[in-house]
Image (tube, rainbow, N blue to C red; front, side):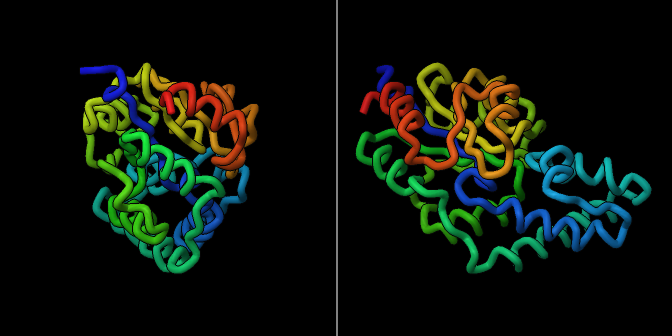
Length: 224
């Protein structure tokens, strides 16, 4: 296999492809607020952002039986999907970057801890579902982020290798997952600071996908 065919771009979805964190925050407060857990942006970034629903439920709904935990988290996702409907916009520069990858024959993969319904809603709402060769869901694997398994599965899905591929993330757990899989990772600053992302392992950070440093690194690694 040539190195050219070993390359891939891997993207988290929430907060990376679209800035949805404020809507997730509202949905969590709607469902967990009456149960005594209220979050501001800083607490959301520390304790919710990027974590799988099972781990959030184990922490904040520990007094509930597992079936009820799952039901409450499902309520949160329904609330999020209602809030997000018609309000999904790509982070600037994303569509141009995906077009570059398409022209260069570089496969793209979505890697997320979000439920599949959410992932598919966001990708279709952004009009980019057809761009992705695979959608990897952390909750469908033995381990979600921050474990490297989701990104390793994403690489495997398109026969790519980590040293020739690039990941884009917005959360600490996501950056940790991608870095643990051996991927150079770019942090997208929709909610976390650049310093927080670098501390988690990001090579560099950018606010948008048309950032010159991001484009320079992508062009060098993807050879386009």
